[in-house]
Image (cartoon, rainbow, N blue to C red; front, top):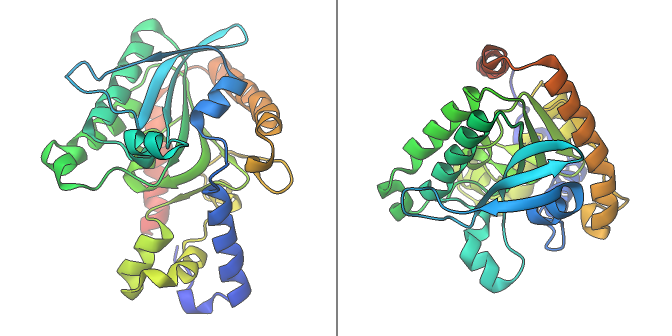
Length: 277
C-alpha cells in the first residue's frame, strides 16, 4: 500500500486534515481522566512502577463499568501549566511504561479486563529517557500487551503518536473518537523529516491520511465513536454519554468471545504485512 505524494493533496484537503489535528489537540478537549470520571465508576488510581518511579504522564488504576471490574491505563496531558509540566504533556518516560507493565501484570493475576485511553504526542524523546532505557521499556510494554491473558479494549480519544501510542494500543479491539487520530509521527515531525521544513505540517497531515475512517478500513480500529457537533471539547458530558455505551458493548463482546493472545498477535502481524507490501 502506498500513500499519495504530499503534493497531490489539494489545499482544501490539506486544510481539512490540519483542522482535524487541531480539534484533536484542542486545549479544552476532554483528557483521559475527564472521560474516566464520566464513563467509569469508582476509579481508584495506583501509583508507581515498583522500581522507584511514578511517571504522571501515564495513569493506571482499577474501576468499575456497571457491574464489571476493570483495570485502566491512560495517557494524561494535563490541563494547567503546572500540571502539563508535571505530566510532561502526556509524553511518558520509561517509568511510565513500566507502570503500564505493572497494570497489565496485575490485570492478569486478578483476571480483569483492561481498558486503555490513548492521547499522547508520543514517548518522551529526551536523552535522559533514552539513557534509562526508553526503547527497551516500550518494547517490553508491547510484549506485555500481546501476552495479556484477559480481554483488552483501547480507545483513541485524541492524538496517538508513534511508539507512545502503541504502548497501550495493541488491544483485542480499538475504538477511535470521531476527531482523534493515530500516526507514525506528528505532522510537524513528518514535515521536518520529509521536507526539512516543519512549517509544511498541513501538507504532511494530508499525506499521513489521519481520518479515522482509514483506521477502520485498514483494520487498525474497529469502530468510530461520534462526538458532539463541533468536537468533544464542546460538551464533555455528551462525549462521555456517546462513548460509554460503545465501551460497554464492545467490552461485553470481548468478554463473551474469550481471550486468545494468539489471535491478538495475528491482528497486528497482519497489519505489518499490509503496510510492508
